[in-house]
Length: 248
Image 1 (cartoon, one colour):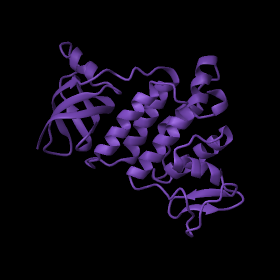
Image 2: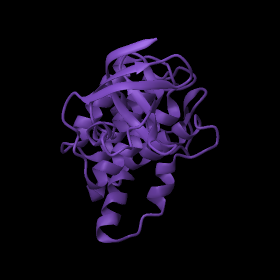
Image 3: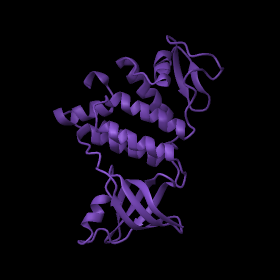
């Protein structure tokens, strides 16, 4: 199958053989595709290689006849997101979420559009703590992994002051030891930014929900963040992406 002029982003790239790259490409109409980009590490392919960077909107032509497609052509279709510092780290976290939770060949134009939108948001001023929670929510919903945010596993309405834990199989379960308050779940459902303490609890609850779909393997991003030095620049990046709103 030949795929032509397909809007796409590169989620991940690694060297393959002497002059080529293995790419994970997220396309609008065909979902995530593994791609071999032959010869792009050669000295005459600098412009093409520059287009195959994360966070650059591109248009690609692919020949897809086996598990891995072959790159025929690629060119930028818009400016790169221009992410720096903690915003760049957040972008890599978003990419890893897509890589680990989505399946190859699962088309989803709405998810592609949401991903494009979050890159634009990352380049803006929205607090990372809220921006990432919204993307995690939308990703889980589009992949069919999200629980009901407004009711419990028993069908009862979420009570703002009640504590809940998020169970991957049945949804919110009321318990005094729950990680998150009902008001935070309702705020997430209404697309309203919760209070700072509720945002931290929401981060932990959503992280647990995401972890339940990772087959026992944590995201690399979580481990990298845990090892960051507590220098002024590194510490700031760590605090922002780990979503302590008091540090925004």
